[in-house]
Image 1 (cartoon, rainbow, N blue to C red):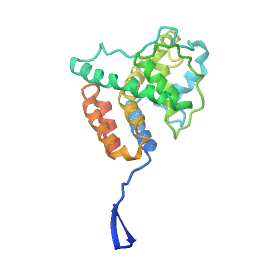
Image 2: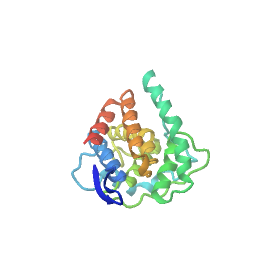
Image 3: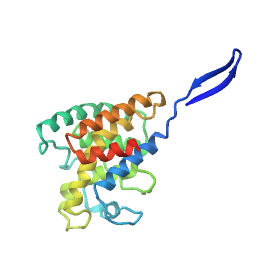
Image 4: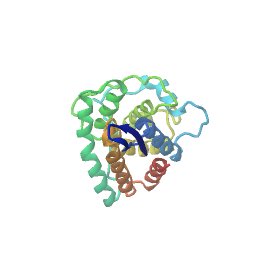
Length: 226
């Protein structure tokens, strides 16, 4: 995009960077991945599985001093393990930097990423699930990671109390993508001047993520290209 403006030496052309709201772009990517995984079949604006989790939160552990279902790469192929290790090495460092100056949901998301990836050495207390807004994805990310961390205890409840077996696996696929790939982009997207580089890094990471889960990577790539 070019802007023509007057100057002391006449008219000069200046190039402008067109950059959409980074958080909005992130929400579009997450929405596409969540929908394509078919985690929720309900047409309601509320996500039923998250509502059930909030309703039954009191029957589940409220801190990380219990045995949690953290990230496990043993089920993946050797090629996928290489990619996963590459992603996993970068996220905790970024997350710890964000913890220094983030607050509220943003800080909790960074904290949960570290915990899910096995990089937290301190006990983390799980905040009671708060309000959900259909237009914002941060709360939904936090819900999803908590559900995956507490997967063992959720499965001890009667079937369908919070999740079904199919939802449990799909939510974990969503969380692995969110913590390993999306989180890296989100934690650096606040820098407008670095937008082109960060977006290029995201595309490269999504191409690499095909070795881990091709369907999720393709969904995210298509959403980002659109």
